[in-house]
Image 1: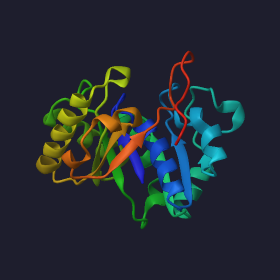
Image 2: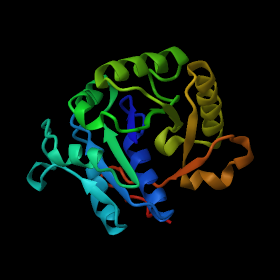
Image 3: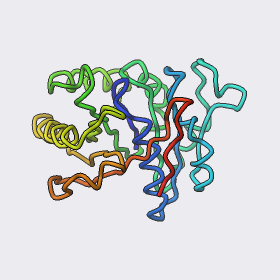
Image 4: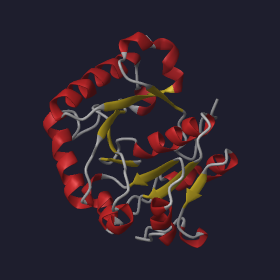
Length: 223
């Protein structure tokens, strides 16, 4: 499963929390950090809690973890050729971040995959259907791969309110109909779940426990 989207869509938080959820459901999970563009808020920042849960993580060598360099571990191609029950690949933002996928074309050949576009309709460039479709086309062209589904991730970080989740869900559901892509699930911050009527949604819900936070805040513990 390849996770893509525009900058600020929340790809990495979704990747981390999805990995934890599936691990706790009994799957063998491996996670690769392919964000070679943005030096901040990458999967590698949560490597310790993920490793403690038994999730196998593919990262650059330790000495390069804080480097803003295009370093692609050969192990990534290996994990694509020999996937676990669930192999997650967290890709950098926009078409620039997705370009790295084209270099893995041989590894992906003849391998079934899902590539999910994360949509945060409360962010610039994805507040309209046309904007989301434009980003989709750019990512597909850069990666030489096809997006197969959508994930709704409506949030304003600490300013998110239940109404934002509802309106965001309605938008992504309409985008699903217009694009022909299935809405796989919606991501909702765990602390907001008690305030929301689950019957409002016609897709699965992924609770989000924020792991990528500024230095003055603590990451949320997984329940």
